[in-house]
Image (tube, rainbow, N blue to C red; front, side):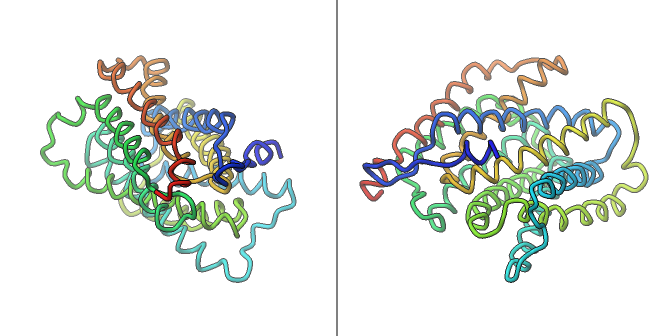
Length: 315
């Protein structure tokens, strides 16, 4: 499998640290670009589908794609002995993260939601410091995370300083979603060492999909579903490309590389979303984009520039 060969790491001979080669950095940035497109596709999809219904449809397609992919490679999706409880708890965390994001976004501005959910690299770095061997939260990594997130704050400045009345619940829910996403990413790195990526992904979706449709039936009813060709294409993109290909590829990345050093690359996701919204939906570019984007790039550079020296120094 080409993706697996691309992902395999090489250790730094001097320090023993796992280097993140440029080909992997570029591949993760490509995944971030595809994930950035989901903001556009969600806007289109929500014209016909309500949030929980859209999530259920998205992951139903993703489950089908991953199951088909696994079957073609002869990989069993049946949980092995000792995996069931871990997969169930992981699936519930996945369901909670998506639900908090959808529910919270519905209660606040989309721009504010983007900022709060993109706090997840901070939580990845903090949790990884304690549970991922060798992925320490050193000085330069902390500085890089702060610089990169500062760029996001500048890009979305107008959304943040606007009218905040009545948005506290939505802001807190999307912040909780960011924390849960950080925890999911770090736990994926740990679980995928002993559980095949296909089983890990299909199990979390098998838990989440019924929950999404039940929530849709309770809160959205029949108004949760409509039809149009653009909305159908948007759902297919979210399901096949993002929930299918991107999740498999991202899980394989997390199998081999320190979570905090690759997760920071996803600070670019909202920037890709803005660019695609401009190109496809003709939405205006914000003045802060020119200042915020270089800060995001600088922050990513700092996080990945000094990991070997920090490990060697025991920081």
